Image (cartoon, rainbow over all chains, first blue to last red; front, side, top):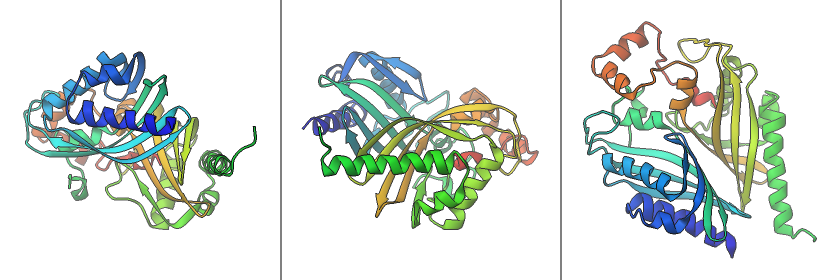
Length: 146
Length: 180
């Protein structure tokens, strides 16, 4: 079933590329001209663009891992909702490591063609991450990561 | 080719969410929004410190949003349905022409904010909502926070953020939980 294959591909991006830092898997999963739309980099193209985003975040959060919570698939699209977790262990956005844990919700929609991801839309709240590593003040007691 | 019963259900679910967005949220019709939601509907949003599950909280979120952005509307970019879920990719178009957040900011600026929302349906109503968006990006678009994270960091370290908050120059609470 195509929907199940697409879900599996979207899950592999989370597991292999983001959680295990296996950057070569991006070449297998993303089309060369895959168009990426993310809040962090706004736009990226192909596996190299994804590798760059993953490398930057994994440098600051080497234990970064993703827990998939929801997947919804129809036709050639998959939506994956997940939590990004890790510890702020290296410099991030000019800030010294705080050793603080992050736990940020994120959603990615992917469009698939011929077994490859051809478009990738990510939404996540950078504000939540910046707050959790102390770049912006925690504005309420409940704002702290669990 | 005839639709299978499953396909018909998925089309029906998408139609329900389309009406919820276009006739309820875009026309600022809270009664319709309420009629489409279960009594115990739970809304998850990155800037809301805990999920909103009370009817009064959900109504307040919507009303504060429409007060801060009188022309607030969503454009539907794409919908994906499977089982009880409908996932939607949206762009929120809104002008901040009314008081926003505890500091009552009126920036006069217009934002185009990408948002992804996942709706879980139960008995033909919306029972759970997950909203993902870059709140940081929206505050930048409104000009309510400095552009440089490094500057933000040092302002925070030196306590300048709190002084600005006390002076009402930056929001104390994140106003954008209202982008629901």
